[in-house]
Image (tube, rainbow, N blue to C red):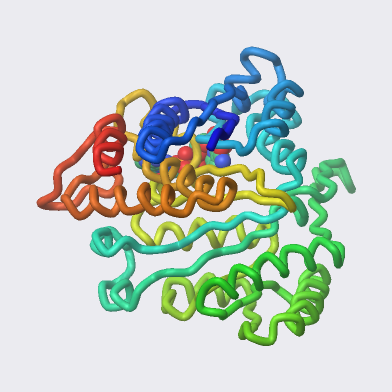
Length: 356
Ligand code: NAD
């Protein structure tokens, strides 16, 4: 198969980890007889420096014509003071919205070999952590009206969290369908005791649930969910929630699995073209040191093979290679523990390639 992939190398550790993800994709192409064509798509800080815009129209065009998009991470202190509408993160929000990606799926799965890296007590981690967070991606507070003004002699700021029925309905379908392919348990998370947008959320998710009688639906307030994720994560199979809650809960969920450097994420809309990225940021504190963990981005590439290219065997090969590297005792700095062998970013990428 021939597939074109838009590549957003990103900022700080971005280019370092992307180099390893491309090496892994090249190894997959070689082993399975595919051809991957990479199309450079500058975004974030790199694009601000070159074009004065975090998402130039040429980049959006490239992403909309490619079969899928692979992104490392954007941003960094160099661009912290640029005007709000031109910040690197704005480029990412515009890209998600331009590609119509309304669902973000983030797995929280602990590798057996990394149980000792989980901050949870062993008896909790040993019960197993294997759930996914389905987060609504282009609605809610991040896309509502943001306003800062002077009122009664002081600054006043507000952000509107708004949802329409159809926005909730389509993400609910994604969540129920995801649950159907797993253990058939869906927990919808909201703050329906306080927020109107959450009351609507709960009503619509409940209505959609009638179309999926084989999936057990429960509802949970977001504050309780934040507690339950650390108290007994084994109770969860699929969690569905709105944009802001999902941002926070999925970071919490990834931390309990060991390292933020290990977790991939996918953004999908109605078609097969997706945006695949690790959940971490551009880690300016370790940029250029060959210490970043490339695994989150490599597993994101595996998700792309599985969900956008329908290449399940190829995705399995990448995921199994990651497990094998861990089993053989190799770690990057962020997951290092006593008795293991520490590898740099490049060496970890090579170790994974060698096992595909
Ligand atoms: P971050 O995820 O970049 O870093 C948090 C901590 O995790 C740091 O100590 C970092 O060294 C570590 N870390 C992150 N990724 C790692 C990896 N692959 N291997 C080893 N350690 C890793 O979050 P931050 O510090 O809050 O943000 C840094 C910059 O990234 C900011 O400019 C922020 O806006 C941007 N950011 C971008 C994205 C994105 O592109 N999707 C997401 C979040 C943050």
